[in-house]
Length: 284
Image (cartoon, rainbow, N blue to C red; front, side):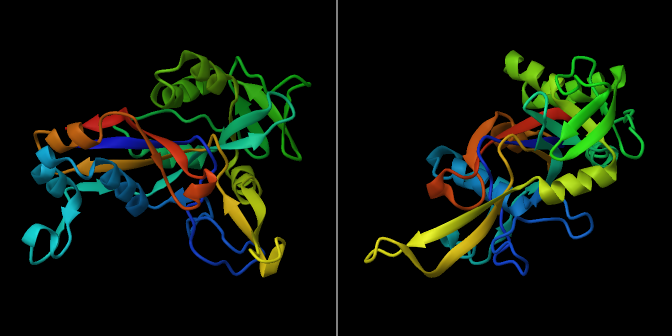
């Protein structure tokens, strides 16, 4: 049994990799082959495990779903959990827009990788080089067929097929909120893969942080660093599956929408996210 696992960032998320080698001291995790941001599956499974931990009436189901460590409840050797979470890759990146405030941007290759997790075929609109496709109700396009994302001006075309793609995502991520469903539909854009890669490189948040010396009340010596975050409104998607016929574990732990904290910097409000288990690729 398999489901899609959507992650919707309510606040910036710092899913980091430790110290970086460039000018960003604390970068976020990025895929090796694409450079696109992602959240490791181990992080997702860990926060969901923590969320459900402690229910005395579900110990057996909990251990079956998430596994046990050596020494837990007298167990001599650890066991692997039956729930398997993949990494959650970027699906829609929020990017500042001259019109409409911001856009949820994706690309054909990004959508293609996402749709490979679904059952059945799905047509993915392709804007071509240096172009963009937007919905027929778009709030991004008010100036002669162009949209303006960050410092880029891109030729854009309204297309009915883009409505279908945007609706497929919105029906999962914003199924319980009609207002935000409409907001997403009016701010969705598909750009070519090269533009999307550029925006993934430049469209994340990078903030300067300092540590205050308790004695002097000023910045501590050498305690200045730059920290990267996925911006609020980012949408990512991965998969979760379980080799069981009954679907009991999936129904118990991967059914309802969860509001959890992902990544580091929780004390500064980072990492508040909604995890939605979608129905685009449910299968038995």
